[in-house]
Amino acid sequence: MIRFREAETEDVPAVVALLRDDALGAAREGEDPGGYLAAFERMRGEGANHLIVGEDEAGRIVGTYQITFISGLSLRAARRAQVESVRVAADLRGAGVGAAMMADAEARARAAGCRLIQLTTNATRERARAFYEGLGFTPSHIGFKRELT
Amino acid sequence: MIRFREAETEDVPAVVALLRDDALGAAREGEDPGGYLAAFERMRGEGANHLIVGEDEAGRIVGTYQITFISGLSLRAARRAQVESVRVAADLRGAGVGAAMMADAEARARAAGCRLIQLTTNATRERARAFYEGLGFTPSHIGFKRELT
Image 1 (cartoon, rainbow over the protein chains, first blue to last red):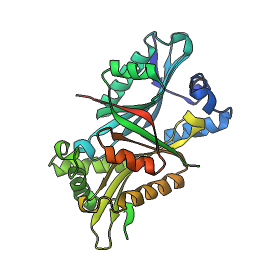
Image 2 (cartoon, one colour):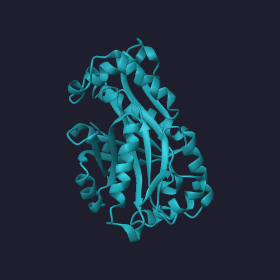
Image 3 (cartoon, rainbow over the protein chains, first blue to last red):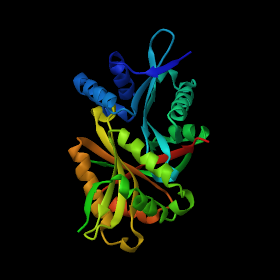
C-alpha cells in the first residue's frame, strides 16, 4: 500500500533524488540542497501549489508529483489542475505506482473543484505518452517552453 | 500604444468577449457573467495567478492573457511562468499585439524570478504554432488534457 500525502520539509531530499533518477532529470538537477528547500518554501507560499509524495509502508518515498490548481475565465470559468514532475522510484516502475498517483491527483483535483486536469510530457518520453493515453488523457496540445536566460 | 496591466473586475466582460471571439472559444464559452466574475475572484485569491489585459489609448481592451507563476523543485528548483488564454481582438490580429503581449509576459516572468516560460496551444491552431516558434519557443512537449465530468 502506498499512501499519498503533502510533502513535508524532511521529504525534500527524497523528492530531489527521484527527480534526479530520470533520463532527463539526471542532467538537469543540481546538488544544492538549499536551493531546493527554498523552492519548497516558495511553493508553500503559493496557496494552490502542492508537492505530493507517495510513501510505502516502510516509510520510503517511492513517488512524487506536483499539482497546481489554476482558476481562470476560459472554458466557462473552469478551474484546472496542472500536474508536473511526476516520478516513480526506478525499481518500482511498471508496478502501478504511476496509475495510483494519477488517481490520487484526480481525487485532489475534484476536491478542489477542477473540471480539467492537464499536464505536458517531453515528446521524447514515449512510454509516458502511452501511459497518459491509457488513463484517458487526450494529446490535443503542443507544449512550448522557452528558457529565460 | 497598448498598455498592459492587471485586470480589474470591470474588465471581466471585455475579457470574456475576447475569449468567445475565437474559433475554439465560440463553442465553449457561456453567457453567465456571474460564473466568470466568481472565477476572477478565485484567481485573485491565488496569489501567483494573474489576468492581464492590453488597453489601447481609447480605453478599449484589445488583448488578454493569463500568467501563473509556479514554483517547483524540478530544473534545479526553477520557478516557471505559465501563460494561458492568450487572445487578441479580431480586428487587430496580425498587427503585433500578440508579440507585445508576450514581451509583457516575459517581463513579468523575469520580474517574478522565473527561469522558464511555458504554454500549450491546441494542435489545430496552426498560426499559433508558427507565432510561438517565431518568438523562440520550442515545441518540445505533448500537452495532455482530460476533462473531469
